[in-house]
Image (cartoon, rainbow over all chains, first blue to last red; front, side, top):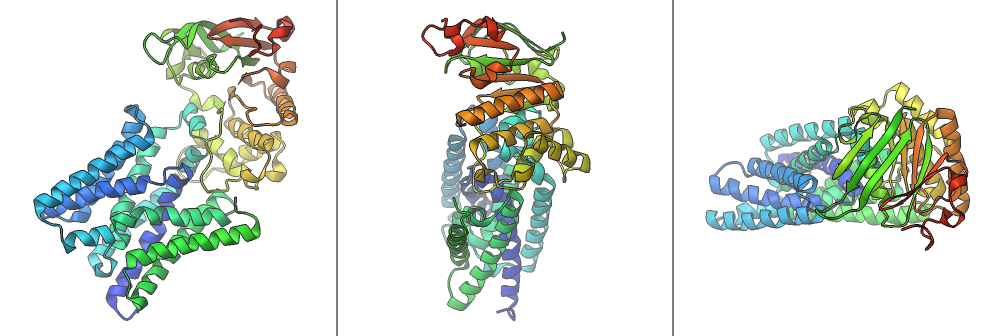
Length: 267
Length: 241
């Protein structure tokens, strides 16, 4: 498997996303906002469509659209008097509707589009990998630096707000992190499965972790393992890698739930 | 006595024409331990939000340590225990992790906690008697112990004013007594101003200096000894309307 460059590039890109997605998704899951990744993924779809229409990098336009979508969701929640799920639904459906209209205008309902919907990790180039590694490093560094602040908001948002912690800025930063993660994950698992890598490893880790910090580290390890195992399975069984990666994460959830039940830690 | 919190002729509604609170005047001196009670829907939580500057009065003024509450410049000195913990999800957060979150405002947002902050966290855990459980997941502890962890979190921020909103919800009677005694000890040892808000005075009545009864406006404000017997349960039908 490793003698092929496309597999080496795919494994490297999968490793970056496998670690980053649960690291960012961790804070969403703890705040019971697991579906935000999905919503922002659908906004990214509009960005991909715009990129295809304008003939510029769909990844770049998806990144911009995802960041804008994430920030709009947060602003609607903070200032628009809109409940979190409704703000998400508004942005979610507007994004996918815009995507459908733009794709239709571009006449691009073809394989180009499908690689973003279902992932195309086996076509990752060296340049793609460099961009993925750079943005992944920026994302992970941000998570490490802001871990204590983001965890503090997870633990007690109201108490933090009373004490003057800039909740709004932290929420916007988290939304931007989600957007970057979604844009990077598109090539690995595709828009339709992007949220799975942000949620399943975190849920799995929660079954066996003994602290918040251990849950985060375990989630990243499970995400990494799922990405690498899923790619290997896809290679040897000739299956679509996006699907096998997410199924590997789902299997990890099952295994961790079982282990948690046996050890008495599972709720 | 310098005032920690002050509401002067405050009225408030969430919508135009609505009056959740009407003509409320409440002054809490620095170092006082005050219990506020009232029936559900009587405006207690709204009163807390006005005191903390999370809402602005429709009429009247709200001050914190002499400053307009909504623009209070030393928010990091406010400790707040919310009505219900929002902590959920899948992470088994430990007591120490919860209490460390109390140093967020004072200890800065970026990077790990400094040594002094970690010492304050350990001190706060010790004060509430949870040192032996410091590294246990919160979800493995009783409701009373979980509430102690959140009080330690508020204490870790070295608050000048500690506000507890319905802190005994879901806590058994024995733990409520223990919680009231803990607050009394913290009040004596630290001299912190405590505003305790609940639907009933309960166990804390033995320890506070003042009881305040709220039913859209303040219907009683005095020492526990002055409170008419029937009003000790604020939801009682004889309590004033």
